[in-house]
Length: 406
Image (cartoon, rainbow, N blue to C red):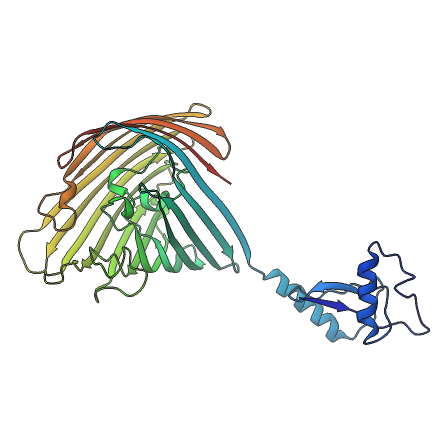
């Protein structure tokens, strides 16, 4: 919608629209016709958007009462409070060659990632992330990965509400859905996304608080999260649950991180997560889930040394011995100008008696590759990996990927 501003005509007449220079005669004619309905047209007449902040469009200074000056100041203040919204997009394309029986070799689209952030004020911000993922059966999966409103009170306390990445370990919150950020083509096995047969609750829907702990040179930081957790194997909701939980027990996660000031790039941390899972077969008792994680890393612009260990315990509420799953990975890389070679070893061992993930068994193997940042916002990666599996045949694969941000 448009509004025509028609300033009052000065006493003693004044120049008409026809007399004033107008680069667009059609626009001038429209202004003259509309202004004629209320009062004689003026050369200062103009068109503005209805939702824009009102501004004085006349070049002639005016002596207005103080309340008009206050109104202009309020309008400028309102304009300064407009949300500052930024959008970044990420995508990747890759070629895979796999030697396992039934595997298909060829090109594939990876994940299209839309990331947006809006600064509503000095203390309030909103973050959102949505993805469109190409699936092996030639379909797409659209997901709202994150939607989070955060209030920052101080360095010691910030509170958030929404859907977010759970602070389990380091990798899950350091690397989200844009593969361009990751050194390797894919994530470590133990931190695989839940849609890719991941073991861990990558996402959580709920509230989160974090901040610095006064600790001097130790550089301690805390995280506390309460949410709906994941839906286990329930058919009534997808993990993590976007709506109502399938039981009345919330998930709770606590994490503590140390970044010593003396060693720039060094970080160590631990986390403890607890949840209760409702099984798809509701005749079976729920399962209590406890996940402990620890990490240590040294990361600079040139050197990357990552190591994480995770233990996940599942115990049925009906009793019996708990099932303990263990997993870890170690990754190292070194940058030489635009080239970064890297190696990683993955290990995950799930007992066959585990009611949720027993079919995965034990998986382990090395990965090695090279990343070439041929542009500031684009990278080419090529890597080879070998995977030993107890429930499936061993697998060798080669992946080449182009990932980029725009």
